[in-house]
Length: 105
Image 1 (cartoon, rainbow, N blue to C red):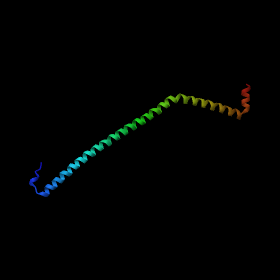
Image 2: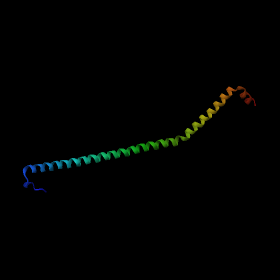
Image 3: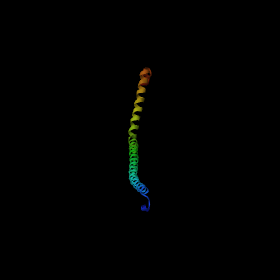
Image 4: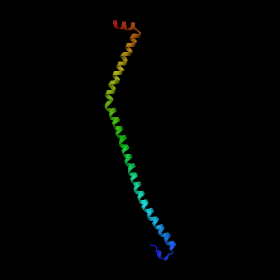
């Protein structure tokens, strides 16, 4: 430690003020470090929750697709069958003579 009683009064006062400012700066730095650590923890938690949220959303979407696939396939096959019947009916309406010949044979 510096012996302050050997120095003149103004120099001693300046050193004491600097020491006091240094201590305040140290306290503020410690306080800011704690706050920054809390902010970093908050950010990490938010990133983790977002990953879990989107992962869950993706898993639910893929699961719904996987389990609904047979029903969608049945609906599409029914739609294709209906479309074929409609096209054959419309072609019979356009060429009624062919339909009558086909029906009579």
